[in-house]
Amino acid sequence: MNTDLRTDPLATRHARRPTSTKPAILDEIHRAITEGGCTLTEIAWEQQRLHEARRWSVVELISNIDLERLSEGDRVRIWNAGRAELTTKPGADRVARLADAECRRWQGEDDVVAAIMQACGTWSRYWNEEEAHHEVVFNQLSSFLGLPAIPDVEFIEYRKVFPDDEMLRTLTLLVISEIVAAVNYGQCAMLAEDPGLRALFKQVAADEIQHMGYFIAFAKGLVDSGAYQAKEAFAVAHFFIREGGDLYGVKRDRIEERDTHVNWWDHLEHGDVSTPDAIERKQTLIFSALKRITGISVSSVEEVEDTWMDLVGC
Image 1 (cartoon, rainbow, N blue to C red):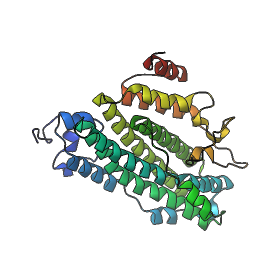
Image 2: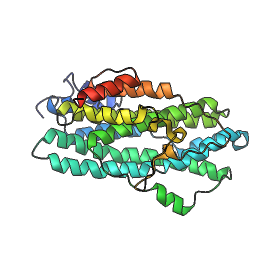
Image 3: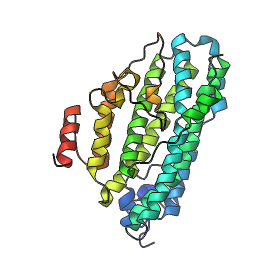
Image 4: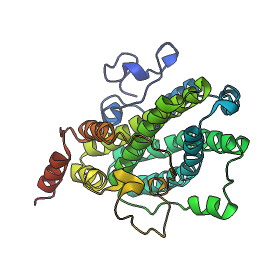
Protein backbone atom coordinates (compact mmCIF):
# COMPACT_ATOMS: atom_id res chain seq x y z
CA MET A 1 0.00 0.00 0.00
CA ASN A 2 1.11 3.54 -0.71
CA THR A 3 -0.79 5.07 2.19
CA ASP A 4 -0.77 4.01 5.82
CA LEU A 5 -4.40 3.70 6.84
CA ARG A 6 -3.45 4.44 10.43
CA THR A 7 -2.53 8.01 9.54
CA ASP A 8 -4.58 8.67 6.42
CA PRO A 9 -7.45 11.04 7.37
CA LEU A 10 -9.68 9.28 4.84
CA ALA A 11 -9.41 6.02 6.70
CA THR A 12 -8.74 6.68 10.36
CA ARG A 13 -11.81 4.58 11.18
CA HIS A 14 -10.48 1.70 9.12
CA ALA A 15 -6.88 1.28 10.25
CA ARG A 16 -4.66 -1.71 9.56
CA ARG A 17 -4.64 -2.49 13.26
CA PRO A 18 -8.16 -1.38 14.12
CA THR A 19 -8.69 -3.17 17.44
CA SER A 20 -8.84 0.16 19.26
CA THR A 21 -11.33 1.69 16.82
CA LYS A 22 -15.07 1.16 16.73
CA PRO A 23 -16.22 -1.02 13.80
CA ALA A 24 -18.05 1.04 11.19
CA ILE A 25 -19.33 0.94 7.63
CA LEU A 26 -16.76 2.14 5.10
CA ASP A 27 -19.04 4.83 3.71
CA GLU A 28 -16.43 6.45 1.43
CA ILE A 29 -15.41 3.26 -0.30
CA HIS A 30 -14.39 4.85 -3.62
CA ARG A 31 -12.06 7.33 -1.90
CA ALA A 32 -10.76 4.68 0.48
CA ILE A 33 -9.66 2.58 -2.51
CA THR A 34 -8.42 5.36 -4.81
CA GLU A 35 -6.85 7.71 -2.25
CA GLY A 36 -6.43 5.53 0.82
CA GLY A 37 -5.12 2.48 -1.01
CA CYS A 38 -7.55 0.22 0.83
CA THR A 39 -7.45 -3.40 -0.38
CA LEU A 40 -10.28 -5.91 -0.58
CA THR A 41 -8.68 -7.92 2.22
CA GLU A 42 -8.77 -4.87 4.49
CA ILE A 43 -12.36 -4.09 3.50
CA ALA A 44 -13.37 -7.69 4.29
CA TRP A 45 -11.69 -7.35 7.72
CA GLU A 46 -13.76 -4.26 8.50
CA GLN A 47 -16.92 -6.03 7.40
CA GLN A 48 -16.09 -8.94 9.69
CA ARG A 49 -15.38 -6.67 12.67
CA LEU A 50 -18.72 -4.91 12.37
CA HIS A 51 -20.56 -8.19 11.80
CA GLU A 52 -19.05 -9.74 14.93
CA ALA A 53 -19.76 -6.64 17.00
CA ARG A 54 -23.44 -6.82 16.03
CA ARG A 55 -24.10 -10.54 16.47
CA TRP A 56 -27.04 -11.56 18.64
CA SER A 57 -28.67 -14.82 19.65
CA VAL A 58 -32.04 -15.88 18.29
CA VAL A 59 -32.41 -18.42 21.10
CA GLU A 60 -31.67 -15.82 23.77
CA LEU A 61 -34.07 -13.18 22.47
CA ILE A 62 -36.91 -15.70 22.09
CA SER A 63 -36.36 -16.87 25.66
CA ASN A 64 -36.98 -13.33 26.89
CA ILE A 65 -40.47 -13.14 25.36
CA ASP A 66 -43.57 -13.98 27.43
CA LEU A 67 -45.66 -15.81 24.83
CA GLU A 68 -48.78 -15.64 26.98
CA ARG A 69 -48.58 -11.85 27.09
CA LEU A 70 -48.65 -11.20 23.37
CA SER A 71 -51.64 -9.41 21.87
CA GLU A 72 -53.48 -10.47 18.74
CA GLY A 73 -51.77 -7.58 16.94
CA ASP A 74 -48.35 -8.83 18.03
CA ARG A 75 -49.18 -12.31 16.79
CA VAL A 76 -50.23 -11.01 13.36
CA ARG A 77 -47.11 -8.86 13.08
CA ILE A 78 -44.84 -11.76 14.04
CA TRP A 79 -46.46 -14.08 11.48
CA ASN A 80 -46.21 -11.49 8.69
CA ALA A 81 -42.59 -10.75 9.55
CA GLY A 82 -41.63 -14.41 9.27
CA ARG A 83 -43.19 -14.74 5.82
CA ALA A 84 -41.68 -11.47 4.63
CA GLU A 85 -38.21 -12.44 5.76
CA LEU A 86 -38.34 -15.56 3.59
CA THR A 87 -37.67 -13.27 0.61
CA THR A 88 -34.40 -11.88 1.95
CA LYS A 89 -32.26 -14.91 1.10
CA PRO A 90 -33.14 -14.60 -2.62
CA GLY A 91 -32.20 -10.91 -2.37
CA ALA A 92 -28.80 -11.72 -0.92
CA ASP A 93 -28.26 -14.53 -3.44
CA ARG A 94 -29.08 -12.10 -6.23
CA VAL A 95 -26.64 -9.48 -4.96
CA ALA A 96 -23.83 -12.03 -4.66
CA ARG A 97 -24.44 -13.27 -8.20
CA LEU A 98 -24.85 -9.82 -9.73
CA ALA A 99 -21.90 -8.30 -7.88
CA ASP A 100 -19.53 -11.02 -9.03
CA ALA A 101 -20.74 -10.80 -12.65
CA GLU A 102 -20.32 -7.01 -12.62
CA CYS A 103 -16.90 -7.34 -10.99
CA ARG A 104 -15.71 -9.57 -13.85
CA ARG A 105 -17.22 -7.19 -16.41
CA TRP A 106 -15.38 -4.16 -15.00
CA GLN A 107 -12.00 -5.84 -14.47
CA GLY A 108 -9.43 -4.20 -16.72
CA GLU A 109 -11.84 -1.41 -17.67
CA ASP A 110 -12.27 0.16 -14.22
CA ASP A 111 -10.58 -1.87 -11.51
CA VAL A 112 -11.88 0.38 -8.74
CA VAL A 113 -15.47 -0.32 -9.75
CA ALA A 114 -14.58 -4.02 -9.95
CA ALA A 115 -13.25 -3.85 -6.39
CA ILE A 116 -16.39 -2.08 -5.12
CA MET A 117 -18.51 -4.77 -6.74
CA GLN A 118 -16.45 -7.53 -5.16
CA ALA A 119 -16.62 -5.82 -1.75
CA CYS A 120 -20.39 -5.70 -2.09
CA GLY A 121 -20.56 -9.37 -3.00
CA THR A 122 -18.29 -10.22 -0.10
CA TRP A 123 -20.48 -8.34 2.36
CA SER A 124 -23.61 -10.09 1.07
CA ARG A 125 -22.59 -13.17 3.05
CA TYR A 126 -23.01 -11.19 6.29
CA TRP A 127 -26.28 -9.70 5.10
CA ASN A 128 -27.50 -13.21 4.29
CA GLU A 129 -26.56 -14.50 7.74
CA GLU A 130 -28.09 -11.57 9.59
CA GLU A 131 -31.32 -11.82 7.64
CA ALA A 132 -31.41 -15.54 8.42
CA HIS A 133 -31.67 -14.55 12.10
CA HIS A 134 -34.75 -12.47 11.30
CA GLU A 135 -36.42 -15.21 9.28
CA VAL A 136 -35.81 -17.93 11.85
CA VAL A 137 -36.69 -15.89 14.94
CA PHE A 138 -40.10 -14.80 13.65
CA ASN A 139 -41.04 -18.12 12.10
CA GLN A 140 -40.01 -20.01 15.22
CA LEU A 141 -42.04 -17.60 17.34
CA SER A 142 -45.00 -18.26 15.04
CA SER A 143 -44.54 -21.98 15.63
CA PHE A 144 -44.39 -21.56 19.40
CA LEU A 145 -47.57 -19.46 19.24
CA GLY A 146 -49.41 -22.09 17.21
CA LEU A 147 -49.92 -19.77 14.25
CA PRO A 148 -50.61 -21.20 10.76
CA ALA A 149 -47.55 -23.00 9.44
CA ILE A 150 -45.97 -21.97 6.15
CA PRO A 151 -46.48 -24.82 3.64
CA ASP A 152 -43.34 -26.02 1.90
CA VAL A 153 -44.74 -24.98 -1.47
CA GLU A 154 -45.16 -21.41 -0.21
CA PHE A 155 -41.72 -21.45 1.40
CA ILE A 156 -40.21 -22.47 -1.94
CA GLU A 157 -42.26 -19.85 -3.81
CA TYR A 158 -40.92 -17.11 -1.54
CA ARG A 159 -37.38 -18.28 -2.31
CA LYS A 160 -37.54 -17.24 -5.98
CA VAL A 161 -34.47 -15.15 -6.79
CA PHE A 162 -35.19 -11.66 -8.09
CA PRO A 163 -34.30 -10.99 -11.75
CA ASP A 164 -31.11 -9.05 -12.40
CA ASP A 165 -31.09 -5.32 -13.01
CA GLU A 166 -28.53 -2.55 -13.37
CA MET A 167 -26.41 -2.55 -10.19
CA LEU A 168 -27.10 0.98 -8.97
CA ARG A 169 -30.81 0.40 -9.44
CA THR A 170 -30.54 -2.86 -7.51
CA LEU A 171 -28.70 -1.25 -4.62
CA THR A 172 -31.15 1.65 -4.46
CA LEU A 173 -34.08 -0.75 -4.38
CA LEU A 174 -32.41 -2.58 -1.50
CA VAL A 175 -31.80 0.70 0.34
CA ILE A 176 -35.52 1.45 0.14
CA SER A 177 -36.49 -2.10 1.12
CA GLU A 178 -34.33 -1.84 4.23
CA ILE A 179 -35.85 1.57 5.04
CA VAL A 180 -39.36 0.15 4.78
CA ALA A 181 -38.42 -2.84 6.92
CA ALA A 182 -36.66 -0.74 9.56
CA VAL A 183 -39.56 1.68 9.92
CA ASN A 184 -42.10 -1.15 10.00
CA TYR A 185 -40.19 -2.94 12.75
CA GLY A 186 -39.87 0.33 14.64
CA GLN A 187 -43.65 0.68 14.48
CA CYS A 188 -44.03 -2.90 15.70
CA ALA A 189 -41.71 -2.16 18.64
CA MET A 190 -43.81 0.84 19.69
CA LEU A 191 -46.97 -1.26 19.62
CA ALA A 192 -45.54 -4.29 21.48
CA GLU A 193 -46.44 -4.49 25.15
CA ASP A 194 -44.09 -7.33 26.07
CA PRO A 195 -40.54 -6.03 26.80
CA GLY A 196 -38.91 -9.08 25.24
CA LEU A 197 -40.81 -8.74 21.97
CA ARG A 198 -40.19 -5.00 21.94
CA ALA A 199 -36.45 -5.66 22.31
CA LEU A 200 -36.57 -8.16 19.43
CA PHE A 201 -38.32 -5.73 17.09
CA LYS A 202 -35.81 -3.00 18.00
CA GLN A 203 -32.88 -5.33 17.35
CA VAL A 204 -34.18 -6.32 13.93
CA ALA A 205 -34.91 -2.68 13.06
CA ALA A 206 -31.32 -1.76 14.02
CA ASP A 207 -30.03 -4.53 11.74
CA GLU A 208 -32.08 -3.19 8.85
CA ILE A 209 -30.69 0.33 9.38
CA GLN A 210 -27.17 -1.08 9.29
CA HIS A 211 -27.97 -2.93 6.06
CA MET A 212 -29.36 0.27 4.59
CA GLY A 213 -26.07 2.00 5.44
CA TYR A 214 -24.06 -0.65 3.62
CA PHE A 215 -26.21 -0.45 0.49
CA ILE A 216 -25.96 3.34 0.52
CA ALA A 217 -22.16 3.10 0.81
CA PHE A 218 -21.85 0.73 -2.16
CA ALA A 219 -24.30 2.77 -4.24
CA LYS A 220 -22.43 5.98 -3.43
CA GLY A 221 -19.18 4.32 -4.42
CA LEU A 222 -20.60 3.50 -7.84
CA VAL A 223 -21.86 7.05 -8.36
CA ASP A 224 -18.54 8.48 -7.13
CA SER A 225 -16.75 6.35 -9.72
CA GLY A 226 -18.59 8.10 -12.56
CA ALA A 227 -19.44 4.72 -14.07
CA TYR A 228 -23.05 4.84 -12.84
CA GLN A 229 -25.47 7.72 -13.15
CA ALA A 230 -27.56 9.31 -10.39
CA LYS A 231 -30.64 9.15 -12.61
CA GLU A 232 -30.90 5.40 -11.98
CA ALA A 233 -31.16 5.92 -8.21
CA PHE A 234 -33.85 8.55 -8.70
CA ALA A 235 -35.74 6.30 -11.14
CA VAL A 236 -36.06 3.58 -8.52
CA ALA A 237 -36.94 6.04 -5.76
CA HIS A 238 -39.68 7.55 -7.92
CA PHE A 239 -41.06 4.08 -8.66
CA PHE A 240 -41.52 3.57 -4.92
CA ILE A 241 -42.71 6.94 -3.65
CA ARG A 242 -44.93 8.08 -6.53
CA GLU A 243 -48.67 8.05 -5.90
CA GLY A 244 -49.70 4.43 -5.83
CA GLY A 245 -46.04 3.33 -5.80
CA ASP A 246 -44.55 0.25 -4.18
CA LEU A 247 -43.96 2.12 -0.93
CA TYR A 248 -47.69 1.70 -0.23
CA GLY A 249 -47.47 -2.10 -0.39
CA VAL A 250 -50.73 -4.04 -0.24
CA LYS A 251 -52.71 -0.81 0.15
CA ARG A 252 -52.11 0.14 -3.49
CA ASP A 253 -55.14 0.17 -5.78
CA ARG A 254 -53.28 -2.05 -8.22
CA ILE A 255 -50.59 -4.59 -7.41
CA GLU A 256 -48.42 -5.81 -10.27
CA GLU A 257 -48.55 -9.46 -11.20
CA ARG A 258 -45.08 -10.92 -10.76
CA ASP A 259 -44.25 -14.45 -11.82
CA THR A 260 -40.49 -14.05 -11.43
CA HIS A 261 -40.22 -13.38 -7.68
CA VAL A 262 -42.13 -12.45 -4.54
CA ASN A 263 -42.08 -8.92 -3.13
CA TRP A 264 -42.88 -9.20 0.56
CA TRP A 265 -44.61 -5.79 0.68
CA ASP A 266 -47.24 -7.13 -1.73
CA HIS A 267 -48.19 -10.00 0.55
CA LEU A 268 -48.69 -8.65 4.07
CA GLU A 269 -51.92 -9.76 5.72
CA HIS A 270 -53.33 -7.62 8.51
CA GLY A 271 -56.80 -8.99 9.14
CA ASP A 272 -58.46 -6.65 11.62
CA VAL A 273 -55.12 -5.39 12.94
CA SER A 274 -54.01 -1.90 11.89
CA THR A 275 -50.33 -0.91 11.91
CA PRO A 276 -49.33 2.71 11.18
CA ASP A 277 -47.61 2.96 7.79
CA ALA A 278 -45.37 5.91 8.77
CA ILE A 279 -45.17 6.87 5.10
CA GLU A 280 -43.72 10.31 5.83
CA ARG A 281 -40.93 8.78 7.91
CA LYS A 282 -40.10 6.36 5.09
CA GLN A 283 -40.11 9.17 2.55
CA THR A 284 -37.80 11.31 4.69
CA LEU A 285 -35.31 8.45 4.98
CA ILE A 286 -35.47 7.87 1.21
CA PHE A 287 -34.76 11.56 0.56
CA SER A 288 -31.78 11.34 2.92
CA ALA A 289 -30.51 8.17 1.22
CA LEU A 290 -30.69 9.83 -2.20
CA LYS A 291 -28.60 12.74 -0.90
CA ARG A 292 -26.00 10.35 0.52
CA ILE A 293 -25.85 8.31 -2.69
CA THR A 294 -25.92 11.08 -5.29
CA GLY A 295 -25.17 14.33 -3.45
CA ILE A 296 -28.49 15.74 -4.70
CA SER A 297 -30.91 17.13 -2.10
CA VAL A 298 -34.67 16.58 -2.39
CA SER A 299 -37.38 17.04 0.21
CA SER A 300 -40.63 15.98 -1.44
CA VAL A 301 -42.12 13.41 -3.77
CA GLU A 302 -42.51 16.13 -6.39
CA GLU A 303 -38.82 17.05 -6.16
CA VAL A 304 -37.83 13.43 -6.65
CA GLU A 305 -39.88 13.26 -9.83
CA ASP A 306 -38.64 16.65 -11.10
CA THR A 307 -35.01 15.70 -10.41
CA TRP A 308 -35.41 12.35 -12.12
CA MET A 309 -36.95 14.03 -15.17
CA ASP A 310 -34.14 16.59 -15.26
CA LEU A 311 -31.49 13.88 -15.04
CA VAL A 312 -32.96 11.90 -17.92
CA GLY A 313 -33.20 15.08 -20.00
CA CYS A 314 -36.97 15.50 -20.11
